[in-house]
Image (tube, rainbow, N blue to C red; front, side, top):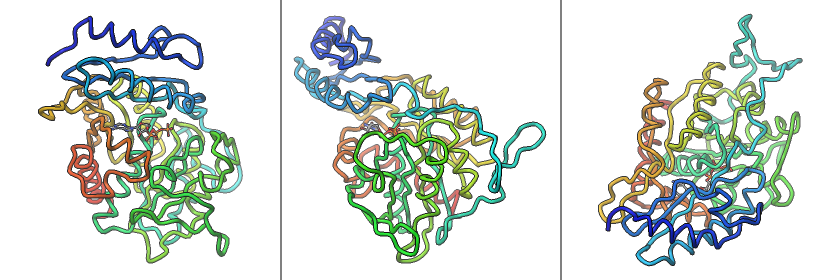
Length: 374
Ligand SMILES: Nc1ncnc2c1ncn2[C@@H]1O[C@H](COP(=O)(O)OP(=O)(O)OP(=O)(O)O)[C@@H](O)[C@H]1O
């Protein structure tokens, strides 16, 4: 038991180097893809950070790496977190100058305010957007689990998956098919007590989708105002899963949808925090309340005691939230059932589960309910 020795590390790096990086053809370690490798108390893990455009190629690589680490003597569990190196979106573009109706209000200092034309989608009482500065930090995992946790509290909940670069709600909620269309609106599916609409239902094939400009804005609008929400009564809350980054799509949402506020998802890594800060600044500039930060993949729970093992640094999100004056809504640990649930269409919070991750999501959901629904 205890900390890794350099021999453990060398053995792990050697097996990881036996797995080929599909982009460079080198071994994973030689390609610089093994970040934050930790071996401790029978657990091994690292962060596999890859460019967003090729992220899909790396799911089998992640699985192979987990298998290789789990095969090492003394390792009982291995967890490799696949994350993207930059927002999967053409992020950080300056706000476009818009013309015509629905334009953002801009004051002489260049501050943009929420558009007067922003409205709540019909039949929806409250709207919460979930954003992240960076891709792959678990924004969709957080959106889906918050939605299911709120639904289990007895609220009428909808989830609009507006992540046009990688819609995940169909997979994470286990729903597929073409939505029906009636009276000019899409009819949402219902899964785990949550009404859901996703760009993934209406886009063709499963290749990564790149919408740009007006098509992107149109697609996001279709996911919100274009849906017949509240099939059995008005929704208490609609969660919008935004694309990663801070681009013009976000401004489209702010411009067209009246948000109660936004939840920012970040990992503890400094790079993700920098991007999260940018997202907070963007929403702040548009007068959108930041309801809080969810720190995801915050730690590995110790397999024996459950005590947090902070593999990617400790306290970053907490300090950042305090600095920004927004609540830290939850610290969600790295959790294998959470990932598996997402892959298999059974969100952790959709069932009875008292794992630390499920508890963290439920606490965050209760805080949001109290903040928004009052
Ligand atoms: N706390 C966690 N523990 C373990 N795995 C996690 C955790 N959070 C997310 N994951 C896994 O990490 C991957 C990325 O998560 P997710 O798709 O939610 O991220 P995202 O930020 O929405 O990504 P994108 O940038 O593509 O929109 C998924 O495989 C997910 O299951």
